[in-house]
Image (tube, rainbow, N blue to C red):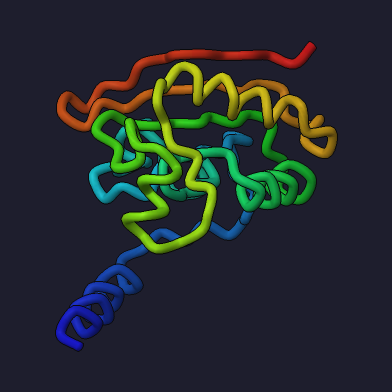
Length: 161
């Protein structure tokens, strides 16, 4: 329990000093889909502040059914019209097969491994643009974050006509 106590103590300091953001709608109308990797400080990497973007995280930063569910709400309830999918270098699912990840985890799941970032990002952006209930999304972009340099590469973009 020492880790839990540390979290609670840290929250007390945060709660006392925080700047509240009353509106749940991201004021930049932006959603970021990225990996759960602990090396990615999404707000710092992209120069964002609290209240400016929704952040959806999962293994690999892939567009899954659950990401589509969150984007449906993000677009129709919270006003999102721009989505960035940001993968990263040295990802734990990069260069591995579904079979290998299933063997490692013991989970019979589709892990959406990444063999090529550009191809995976194109696939994910196409999935967003091809999902009818995400028609409010006007712009999508795919980035790769370099965990060593801190730089992002702008790999693919699409605007909806």
